[in-house]
Structure formats: structure tokens, C-alpha cells
Image 1 (cartoon, rainbow, N blue to C red):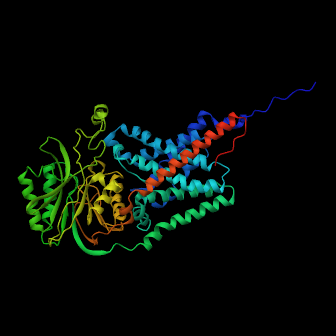
Image 2 (image 1 turned 135 degrees about the vertical axis):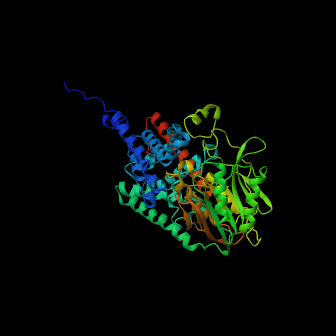
Image 3 (image 1 turned 90 degrees about the vertical axis):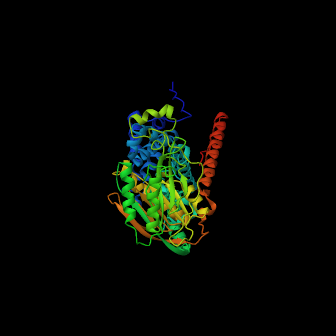
Length: 532
């Protein structure tokens, strides 16, 4: 009597099943590797400043996602990768949020699970040319979508966007003038995706598709930079940036800024910019502080943009950029995008305890209601409208773009990074002014109480700098662009992230439709066709 063999399983073999559900030690080794891989791209940001690394820094993490045994595991690895990225990029927030930072990293890291699933779905072996081409479009779109999602002001706003790694490369920032920092991020993500395909594809056609795309993307920024005419010059102004250094006492800080400004007498300065929180006096109610600024404006021949951090008549504290002339307060802009935990605690009734274990805001600042350009004038009395923004607002592309469209000739950022003086934060912060300049075609300056004061031309090239150890005044001659000059990004706005959202939604819809089709075929007892 012959022995019957057991019927072959219609599903997975034992080996395949084990690969789909790996043992816990193997699973957590891979996830820990993804957590560590998330720190690698941060080395491309200031202060490490290895900008070249950004073009390949995602590859280790993407490789772990690609080789995951299932889409679910790839998504989890993407989550761990995102948590490692946020935790490393924002480590300097520990004084402000304390034990809240790991929570923030886990919450925002979850967005990268979409990248993990997408990479696995499109790039798992054996890779075809069609899937490679789709991945080169969809993976960067999903990456930009996740950056755009965590950039929502209600979630805190943008920081450590991948495109910011290229702030010292005006040729690459040619992309920013067309599509904002989002287009630079998309380019960097596309090159990383192409590098992964080139390293892992077995067949020649996917590698050729990847190589051609990488070359095209790498050439696109310099090509745009070369083809785009430099912003038409229309005169120049001299701006003095006052940096008094770390001075804890508010009155002593004000006096230090005043002494530095008094030293400008006799110099041909058109505008003086003080740092954020350079005075804690409400200049509408403190005649002594206002008289000091009026005298400085009169003797130097230049209007002063002071940083006011004061309690107002309504009893609430706000941060204002105040334009002062010899006649008094000309105008003021109240900060509308506040720093989470630094200037307010979200859901304070629930999270207010963080203030007790960190330097988080003990009292919420009052936000302004709208942005507007300050109507400054140069020393000859000619109009010099400035887009004066405060500290963290330099991270928001839409605010600089609004300033440019409203007629600002110069972008002015006021800053203070005293809490983070010996960290990577000051360098990360000042880099954003360069990107805003390239996006809008406007020269940009940043004046810091402490940190880095710097100036950039209309293409994002650095003109002058005073570092974290410096105090005094940084005086720079800024070439102005002609009134009404607008970049493509000024005109079209956030088309790139909106396009990325559409591509991501389309890919998600196609994935769901394919899953339903395969499920229906399995129920009917027919073999399913693998989705691309």
C-alpha cells in the first residue's frame, strides 16, 4: 500500500511564513537599526554640516524598509526611522520639553510609516523597471507629504525639512526659487531612492532608470540656477545687526544693545535691527525706553527695529517687532506663529506639568492676528518696506512668501537662542534665512541676541556672519532687488506639496483597489495577480 503524501499547502511554505513573521529578537534588531538609521540624515544639517551626505543618508533606512518581510513590518521600521530622525534632529529641545521629547519623536515618527510601507510595496525584490519608475515618483511624494503634514502650524510647524540640508549651496537652491524648500526635499528623496534601486536591483533596466533619474535630478537645481536671471539689482542698503550676547538681566540687555547702536553714529547705516526680546518694556507705555530708541534713531540716522517681549495693557505677554524712528513708534508687528513649549504649552491643562520639569513657557504668550510689512525708510527717506518676522517664523515658507508678495524689499528675522547656545540649534536656525532668501528672491538678515547673526543675498548666498561667540554689531551692505520682483515660488506657492499629496492619495487609492481585487480573486479560488 502506497503512502499518500500530505497535500501541498495552498498558502505560504513554512520558510516563507517564518520570514513573514520573524522571531522577536530579529524583528527588534531591525527596528533598532532603523532607529539608528534615522539619525544619519541629521549629520547633513547644521552644525555637522555634511550637506553631501543628504543625497545618500536615507539609503540605510530605506534598505531596512525594503527588506522587511511584510508591508506591516516595513511601516513599523519607517516609524522607528522617523522617531530616530526627530529625536536626533531636535535633541536640543530637551531643556524646553524635557521628557516630552521622546513622546514628540514617537508621534511625529509615525508619519514615516507611510514611507516604509511605500518603499516595501514598490521596491521589494524582484524589482522591475516599471516599479522602479513608480518608486522614483511616489517615494519622494510620500516623503514630502509627511514633511508637509508635520509642518502644520497647529502641530508646531516645520523644522529639519530635508531640503534645508542644502542651505549653503545656492545652485541647488535654484529649485527653491521654483518650488520652495519642498522641491529641494523632493529632489534629495528622489536621489536617495535612485541610489537604493541602483544598489539592490538585479536587472539592468531598473538600474538604468534609477541612474538616469538621479543624473536628471542632480542637474536640475544648477540648471535652474544658471537659466534663471539673477534678481535685478535696484540699489543697496546698509543694515546693522546688533548682537549683545547672553545678558540675563532685561535692563542690562537693553542697555547693551543701546551702547552697541550708539557706536554706529557717523556710519552710513539705513536700518538697525535688534534681536528678539531685546526689551521687556512696552514701548507704548514706557516713555524712558522709547526715548532711548528715538535718540538712537536720530543720532545714527537709521530707524531701529527693536524686539519687544512685554506685558501689554490687556495683561498678556506678546512678542513684537517694533519700528522706531526719531518721531517714535512707527508701526509694530506681533508674532503670530509661536514656539510650542517655548512660548506656549499646547493643551496646557493637560501638559502644563512640563513647565515644572523643564524651561517650557510658564505662561502662554499672546499671538498676533495677521502679518503685515513694516513701512521703514532708509536714511534718505526713501521707502524700505521690510518683512520683519520673529525667531521661529523663519521656518515657515508661507510667511516669507507673503512678505515678498506684500512688497517687502528685505526679510528681517529677529532671534534669540540663549537656551540652546551650545547646541546645533543656532546654526540650524540661521540656515533657514538663506532658504527664505532663495525662495523669495529677497535679501534676508537675522539679528540675534545670542546665536548667529547673518546676512544673505537674494539667491541665498551668505554675505556676512557673527557667530555664537561674537558680540557687537554686524554691518552689511545688501543689494536690493527691483520692486515687484517675484520668483516662481512667490507666484505659485505650495504647488509641490499639494502635488505630492495628490500623488500620495492616488498611490494609496491604487493600493487599496489592488488589495480588494486580490481579496476578491482569493475568495473566488483564483490566483491573484501580484500588484506592482
